[in-house]
Amino acid sequence: MDNKEQQPTTEISTETTPWDDLATETPETTEVIDELPEPPEPRPTLKNFKGVEQIQNSEGLIVDRDQLHTIIEAPCLPACISLYDKNIQTLSSSANKNICAGDPAFIALEYRTLSEENKAIVQEMIDEGIIPPIITDEKQRGAYYAFIKVKVTDEDTVESVSDKFMEITSRFKEQDVLYGHYDAQTAITDAIKTYFELYPEDANGDMVTYVRKENGEIDYVATLHKAFGEEEDAIKFTENWYGAKYDKETDAFWKSEELLEKHKKYVAEHPEAK
Picture 1: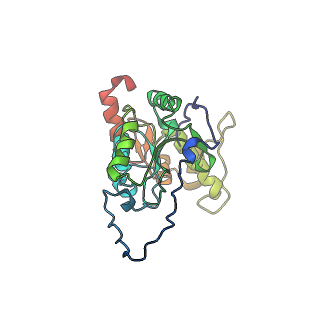
Picture 2: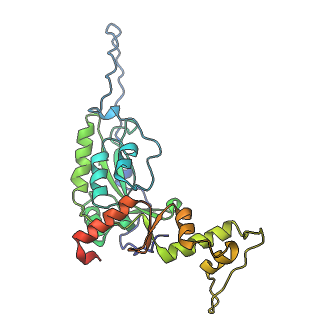
Picture 3: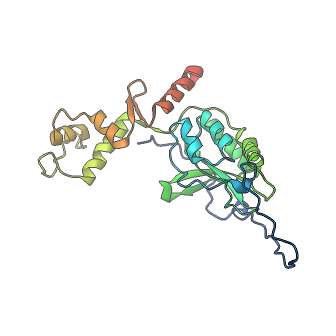
C-alpha cells in the first residue's frame, strides 16, 4: 500500500464555495416569428466546445501516457498531459457539452501526492483566489482534491478552455513520482493480511493458523508459507494481489513500468532527490 503521506496543512473545506455555483441564468426567448424557417442546428466540431462528448469512466490511476488520450476530454487533455509529464497525479476531469454556460470545467489533482514545492504553489493559488480550497472525499479513500476550475461560456471553444487550464497548470513544477507505487514490506504485509481476512483457509481447507514472532506480532510471510507451502513466494503473491511489479532497486511495487522509468529518470536528473 502507499506510504503514509504527510498530512496537508492546507485548510480543508467541505462547504459550498463560489466555484460550486457559477451558473448564470439564460433569458428565455418569448417572441416567436412563425414566418421564418427554423435555422439548421450547427454541426458540432472540436472547435466548438458544445461538440465535445462526455467520456464515461474518466476516473482512475493513470499509469501510462497513452491512457490520457482515451479517458480525458479534449479541452482538458493538453493540461493533463503537461501535469503527467511533470509527474503530477490527476484524479478526474470534466469539460464537455453537458456543462451549462457559466458552470466550471475542472481538473482534480491528488493533493497528497504533490511535492512540497507544488503543495506550496497550490496554497498560493488558493490564497490568490485562483482555485478553491482543498476538499476531502471519504468515499474515495480519503482523497484530497485540489480542484482546478475554469468558467465556461457559450462562446468558448476547445482551444479557449484548454488555454484557461494551461495558464493555471503551467505554474506547477516537475517533481518525483509520488504515486502508483507501494513500499515493499508494507505491501507484502497488507496483501497477505487482507487475503487471509477475506479467505481464512489454507491449502487443505482448514482455518489458517497464524505464525507469530517472539514479540507476539503476526509473521505474515511465515503464515503464507505455512498455509500454502514454502514455494509460495511472497513477492509474486503481492504482485498478483496488487497488479504491480516489484523493483529491487527501489524496493517497491510499481503499477506500471512507465511510472518506474519516470521515477528513475527524475532521480537521474535530480541527484538530490535520492
